[in-house]
Amino acid sequence: MNKDITDPVDKVTNVWLALGPRIIMAGSEVLGTADNISINVAESTKEKLVKMGTAYEIRLVKMLGESGTGGH
Image (cartoon, rainbow, N blue to C red):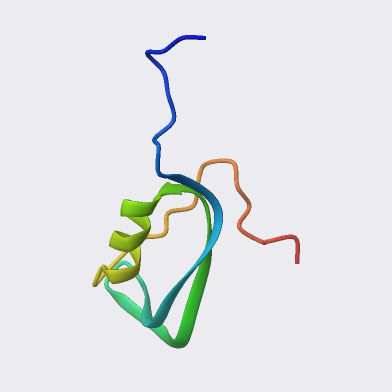
């Protein structure tokens, strides 16, 4: 086993994170509001989950190759 490449000790996967009420924007344009937003975080660390949950603003950026339709 290569000891130079390791996962973070506090790594978490597939965790639902409640973000609470948010304004929904694209660029600088307000598109709407949400009473409660929750996201399923595929991979992060415990420390970064806390930062995401308490951040005033987070960005959601579509990954290349993803359709963004969610299968609907």
